[in-house]
Image 1 (cartoon, rainbow, N blue to C red):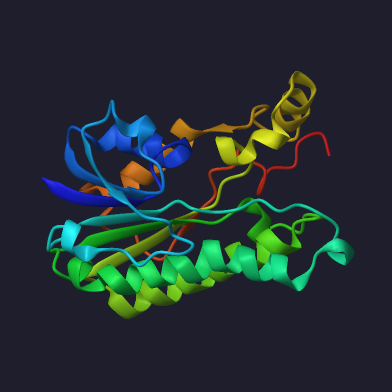
Image 2 (tube, helix red, strand yellow):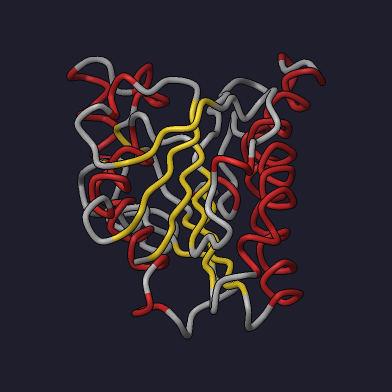
Length: 232
């Protein structure tokens, strides 16, 4: 049975991944809160990715999969963004992620072949107004993931999922009424926004052995937004 560590798994995409994996893997969730995980067959580790150091004594010696879920969505005109906002977005999306990976690298290396799954954004590959801060942070993740995959192949696989707008608590302010939800759905060629389950299905695939020949890839799970021009 594989040991899977989710950084952030109490709600949203991480929670959906935990639901998918809880009976076929030993799932560890490191997150600030754990109220929503009471109904899951998981082990919870109190952890704030923005401030804490991960306590590896609570983890198994072998970790077969890591998913880093914490992120941010700061959308505003560039001229109104302070440098501190860019720094905060880089910290939670990128630097905290690096710290986690370096901390558990021995555990990942102890697996026959471990898998790291990271999250980017469609905004990292498309020029989208008001996305400068999040695009910068997520773009860093994509470049880092390819370099890390090359450095640790074949022992550790590294892949990135780049979604468009997904219905999670993080995106609630963009989907908190019917008008916003309808407009958001219409922006996508597949005429709906994403769900946590959409992303969880891709993440669980990248964690299991069915994807053992896949590494260094960016997967756009975005309703066709990044590649399809419909009625344009």
